[in-house]
Image 1 (tube, rainbow, N blue to C red):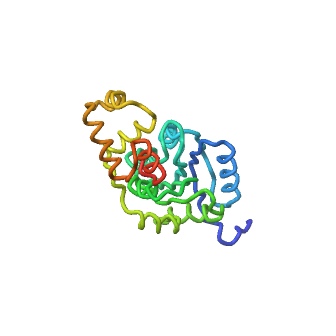
Image 2 (image 1 turned 180 degrees about the horizontal axis):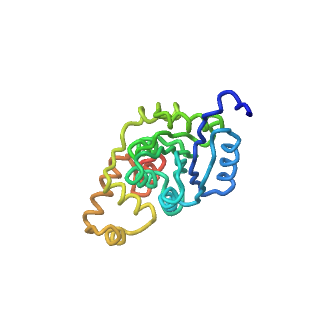
Image 3 (image 1 turned 90 degrees about the vertical axis):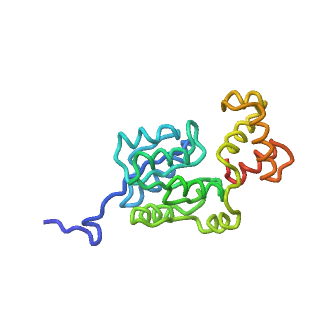
Length: 213
């Protein structure tokens, strides 16, 4: 009878879904995680709106999500997973270390939040820790989020400001969001005041940089 290596006899492989729109980054992350004896990337997707269908088809333990993806953001995908697969652990991995993103990730039920320049060993350890029930957050981002404070924009103000960032007129924004022209103008005015911006374009820039949109 062949003896099992010490410490690996009952080790269970962590099955990971990796969502990242940049193929080179996605493949590199999958390769690095694959070097870990207890981690396997079993499914990869390039769009945020493919995440939910992917976990329906393939059993996974952890969803590792980028934030900025076509179709849906990682934060939006995390919210969908929380609603349908509340037992699934979600870790957000992003290039953009914005405090607002961290707060929104936690609100979406994410168990971890790391930036992409973290060492691969740290990412692998984070996956193991979230499966043990821990919450893993980049310490620098955690401090920044506490210093920055909560997002001052309401859900409606965020929606209007996001639409305005695309360059649409008030009338166009009103039509898309099914609001009156005056309501759009009021939301934009409030958003400009809350962000301390000069105009709506500046407000959208500030809000985006802080991770509020």
